[in-house]
Length: 147
Image 1: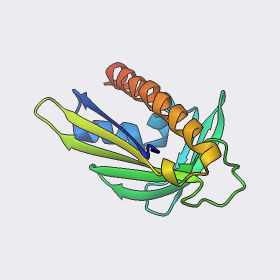
Image 2: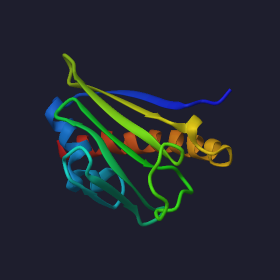
Image 3: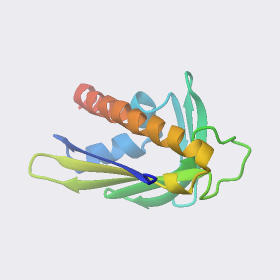
Image 4: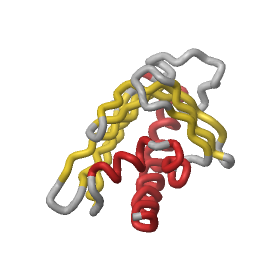
């Protein structure tokens, strides 16, 4: 059986608008997720990530609904930046923010692994599962330090 999605939820003691800025502002994203981010806040716009250690990835913004939902489709691990973005070479990352009494619940869901070529599926799933654990930890650390 192929696993198709990654789901992670974290509770953050910060206002929803603060968390929204941290996940959608290129300046803030580059402090915890990647080294250089290019993003325009609009559905259909390109999004580019650069990690000096790991290379680049790009995609397209699918949902931009402040301050509740943000989603983008990006190329799976091992897919060339020259290859046109398509459902069989990319996954969809969705952030959902919900206000709570203590701050904000952030739900991250990444789907589409089952549509990837079999040779890339497991590597992409395992790498992104581990990657999101690390990156969301870095988000928490960034928010704690920046307020």
